[in-house]
Image (cartoon, rainbow, N blue to C red; front, side, top):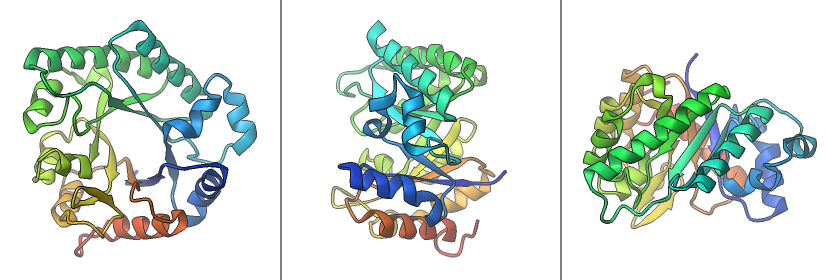
Amino acid sequence: MGIRYAFSRPTAGAAEEEALIHGYQTAGYEGLQLKWNQYMPHVQEPERFMERWGQPPGLASALITGGTLLSDDSKEELRRIFRFGKQVGTELIVYCHSVPRTGLDKEAIAGFARLFAELGKEAQASGLKLSLHHHYDQPVMHRADFDIFFSELRPEDGVGLTIDTAHLVKSGISDVAEVIRSFAPFINNFHMKDFAAGEYRILGEGSIDFQPIMAEVKRIGYAGWMSADEESGGEIVTGMQQCLQFMKSGVGGVSE
């Protein structure tokens, strides 16, 4: 199995949702990584989600969600998503850890890793994989945070890592390839997006140098989901086409 390409994008209203869900396969993607509002209205009734959209392959290959995990309610909300994902054929739960980074010490970050391990085992029991989406102004933000967090985890904990190129750069980490190299055993997803002048850009239109990134993806022999996380606000179909072409080209002659 090689790289499988997915697409993810916020939508505003039914027309954009229709364009996203009816367009990803035509554009050449194998999956969608759905944002919160694209599946949450049906999370208690997965059969209604399937009635609405059918079951095309990869429709809900990943579900993107978030929370603190600091209360029973937050944990139970994630468990509801596990149950929904199991019913609709999800592979990955991509989790944004919505706790501000300011003021956190090493022990707090290590403690969060142990919380993730608890939920990672539960995800595995449901046939799912839990993936931390590191984020600007969240606990795993700075380069040292990655070392602290992942040193607490073991493969059997079932916690992977979603590498988001733009969030790394926004967080002040310029050597994205080094992060990929150092945490390759944990990486189970990529969010590819560009960044420039404080804004997310469509792939190829920002200032991130993707050549060493894609070279490192190849070097580690990555086989799994790579999603264009398109948050530039552009037109959906155009974004789908441009992002897939960019990812598949490998940038600068680094082919798939």
